[in-house]
Image 1: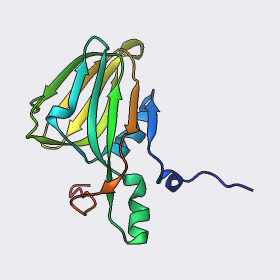
Image 2: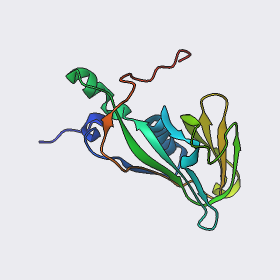
Image 3: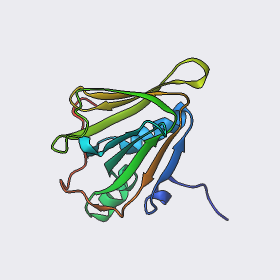
Image 4: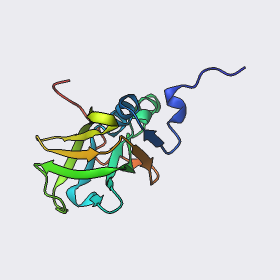
Length: 160
């Protein structure tokens, strides 16, 4: 007899998730909260209509297990990519700057007409990236093995 799947059951597997609606995107947003990346790790392939980020993602799905086992929290490199991107705008971000480390706080979709809309990537420090998309399609994929979080700490949010 098998029980229902639990969130923790996926903690040891690399993530590969797709989002086609706001509910799916909310799951991805929670998993990439507090991901960090240099501004140089953003790419917009205009001809392919694709925008991607190479993130160092905190493994929220593994945090309860790390605490229970008394071991280090983990991060993993992940690609967060969006398809059908028509335009990209940013505020408070200098694309290509390898010295500036950005922290991703949330990803949300603002619907427009006929399935189009804007994906808003909210960054710490009042920055953001806005993607005008023909339709919502996002992919989150872990691309390395997990590694011990360099800070050794779980991200904290004093206002939340």
